Amino acid sequence: MDTLQSLTPELDAFPGTASVWCGRLDGPAVFARAEHELHYAASTMKVGVMAAAWRAAEAGRLDLDAEIAVHNEHVSAAPGGPAYANDPAYDSDQQVWDRLGGRAPLRWLIDRMIVRSSNLATNLVLGALGPNEQAFAQVNEVWQLAGATRAHTDRGIEDYPARDGGISNEVTAADLAALFGALAGNRLASTAGSAAMIDVLTAQQCRDDLHLGLPAGTRVALKNGWVTGERHSSALIFPPDAAPYLLAACTTGEVSDTDACALLGRIAAASWAQLGMN
Image (cartoon, rainbow, N blue to C red; front, side, top):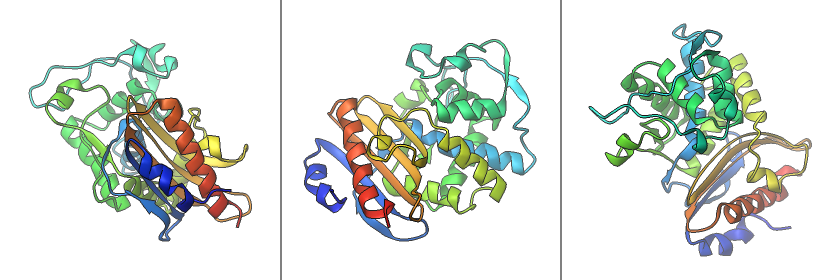
């Protein structure tokens, strides 16, 4: 079975940037490649948004069980920019759209943001954190507390006025692994809050990449993200007969999403060969 090191020629030949970080909790990487290279975050940024909401709730600033309005008009992070809206055809979760014009519990929106990668839910949760400056400061505080060195979150999903103004969300494989490690180590929330967030990530329904290389039934707390030319996935993996470990893989390049998912599956299989069985 392939090891992560044996995948180096394939990763080197990738038509773009392929980044990987893999290692035990609170330990050094057993394999890292281009781990500090920046990638557009896509939906991987939603983990930081979830953690910021949980932290706000534990600080008494937010009630996760309160119902908030489900709307589709969001304030752009671009200074003076126009309001923007999400496109339902670009979303992967119809359930949030079915509540448009009504109300929904914040906790439920957080769940949909993760397990179905709802874009609309993401922007609603960001709005619940406060005005843009406050909301993104809270998410970036999560990155800082996790020990991230380059990742940042500065706009909502589909905020094209901000994107066109050069405002973006970026991650690295090393920083995604650090974020999941901080969750597992209870460094972002209480023990109960951390466990609850890991449970949400474990309920992930979008299983098109790293899951392909892991044995069926393996407990995996995961969030992935994808747009044209980008496919990323980060996970806390719980082998039944070995210690948990972290795996983050990011690809940016001119390959189909199907091929990128298959590559991430091979990376996951190689990680399992090294860390999942002993």
